[in-house]
Length: 154
Image 1 (cartoon, helix red, strand yellow):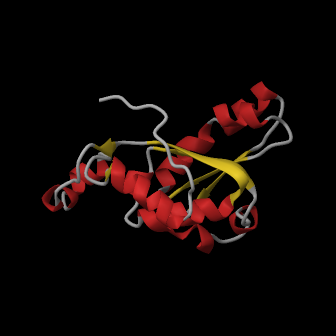
Image 2: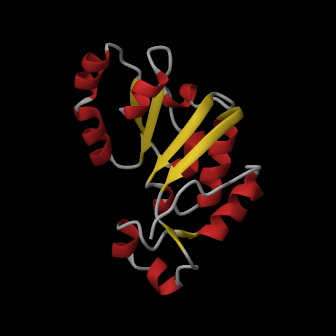
């Protein structure tokens, strides 16, 4: 809902999550925030980030290529199996000059396969973490021209 305030009355915020439980949490206070801000510009849709191009209406109509100024990924990229597809879809949604920000767990070295195969660690957002250099290379591969680390902490 912070993004709602940032984009203002004329902007819009679209959230996508793969689990109904998270969508329920997200929508629980939607009316409250709309009343507090004086406008309703947030919506949530169920889907996989790897398959943003396959979302059904009404979400599909909202996710037109070149239609977003900013994309914010908050601790979800490491839960996605196909990170390249996620980045590719995000890039296609951004307007020219648009930016993607991702707040997520990343690793200072490649995560060993034995840890990647651990479902508990995957669910805890650890074993799906990308090695930072791999993230940067993947972002460049799909077409992001200037991926940068804005801030990190151990």
